[in-house]
Structure formats: C-alpha cells, structure tokens
Amino acid sequence: MVIVSGQNIPSVALFAFGDSNFDAGNRKYLTSATLAQNFWPYGKSRDDPNGKFSDGKIVPDFIAKFMGIPHDIPPALKPDADVSRGASFAADASAQQAFVISVINRLKYNIVMLYSSGASKFVVHNVAPLGCLPIVRQEFNTGNECYEKFNDLAKQHNARLGPMLNELAKAKPGFQFTLFDFYNVDIS
Image (cartoon, rainbow, N blue to C red):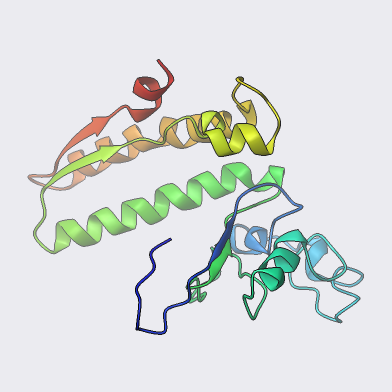
C-alpha cells in the first residue's frame, strides 16, 4: 500500500487471496462455461448472482466495510475493475490452473507490448514460494511449515513461465531474457 498525503488517495485498501470463500467472481472471467454461482440461489439475499460462492456478500466484503471501503472489493480479473481500494485475487480450487494460465497470458501480452515499443532485453523472476510467506503461515496456522497449496500454485506458474519466454525468444527477433529462479533461491 502506498499512501500519498494531500491528494485524496484512500489510505486503506484490501487485497484478498484464497479459495472460493474469498472469490469475488474471478472464476467467471476464467472460463466460458456456464457456472452455477452466476445464477439463483447464489446472491439471493441481494438478488444479485454475481459469481460469488455465497447468497450475497463474502468475508472480504464485510472486512472492506469494516475498514471503511465504501463498496465490495471487485474480482481482480474483471475488465476495467477499479482496484484503487483493493481486489480479490482468490479463485475456487478448480479455477487455480485457469488462473495461472490467465496470469501467464497477461504477462506475455505485457512483455509483447514492451517489445513492440522497442524493449528487447528482459529480466524476469519467477514466483517465490508463496506458501512460505510469514503472513500465509500465520493465516493458515502452519507454524514454521509452509502452506503447500500456495507453493503448488507458484510451481504451476513457474512451470509455464520459462516455456512462454522461450516461445517469445524464438518468435521475436532480438528478444533476450534472463530468468531469475526466485522460488528456489528463496526456499533454500
């Protein structure tokens, strides 16, 4: 969080990570399939089946309200989502692989945009073992042990990152990259 004084920038934002209990609707942006949570009875307490796995609000919505955020936090994958006060990056477990693919595709798109603007040399690091972050270990009460579900998510991402960069190196003349293995440096 960055706080800039004197410019009416909110001093608090909430970013949620997790499973379906925290999914604000990201799954519907990861698939073209018809999803049950987009229809009644989901959202029935607000007459708004919006992709959440609840009958209305989810835990981050209540926390956001408590923090003074004037609206529910949006799904991070929603096009044109206003994330100035936070966003949910959570997705139900069956959507994790689709989420990883979506992140890799977005990264590829951004790298190609930079390449098209004249950049040709890139340093990219993979994702660290997210399950070993102190806040994650605290949240999931794992003590000194890492939360392996998050590490598995990072491993899925990292397994797709190198091949994507190699594909760009073959397809784009002059494209060069260095991939820093942040996952294994951090876990050692």
